Amino acid sequence: MNAVTEPGIADFPAPGTRRIGEVILDLKNISLSFGGVKALTDISFDVREHEIRAIIGPNGAGKSSMLNVINGVYRPQKGEIVYRGQQRRGMNTYAAARSGIARTFQNIALFKGMTVLDNIMTGRNLKMKSSFLLQALYWGPAQKEEIAHRREVEKVIDFLEIQHIRKTPVGRLPYGLQKRVELGRALAAQPEILLLDEPMAGMNVEEKQDMCRFILDVNDQFGTTIVLIEHDMGVVMDISDRVVVLDYGRKIADGTPDEVRSSQDVINAYLGVAH
Image (cartoon, rainbow, N blue to C red; front, side, top):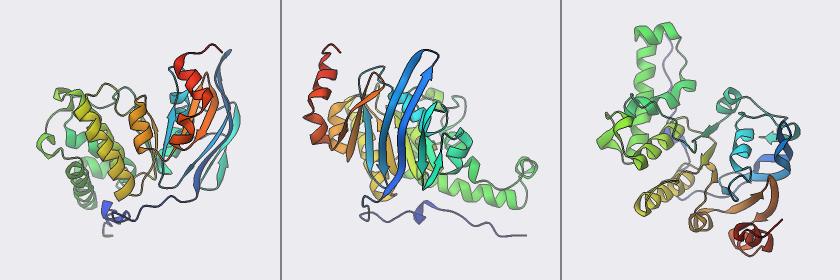
């Protein structure tokens, strides 16, 4: 009987070792249409290892569509994605998850009747090697494997400071804590790239501050590359390394927060100047 090797959060880089690396994800000339509606038109940008890369723009700019292209929900009609040197037109969601891309959603997508612990455990699913039968019997190597994965989930729970609600059904939790649980489920998969779709939407000031702190800590302590959509410009400008701006499905700016902030095209888009 083979011993279970426990892949741990401790395997991530130690705090303080974060540095921006080479391009890990390159999106080239991406175009996506639904019938006659163009959601994305000829968009190109890249994401570097260990950076926080923000995607911003007015409502309907194509931000969530771009995340859906990255993690395989949508397949673009034109363009290609280069991830870790491999070229592809698109990838399915399973392949994206297997290759190290995890995601949270604009609308919370949790199992409301399950506890916080069990919801975060679902993030370990792709890392489980035992057969469904052995898992159901909870016997032998399957039992050892689940215990090892539960230890990793407990580390995520400790990191997010939600020990006091670990046995609480998520449907009973306030909105801000549900958002934190969803982040925990994504972190349990130990992703290389974490896609965050409006992680602070609907939060009060205190909840936003907590979420900002966790995002920065994930990026710094775990070395996780983060791509996020966020409408709070103060947050974006404070925590992002680079920002790409979309408007009506087209890229209108790309650069550092200071460069984007001073772009006349960005100012026009946010002030509603006629196109």
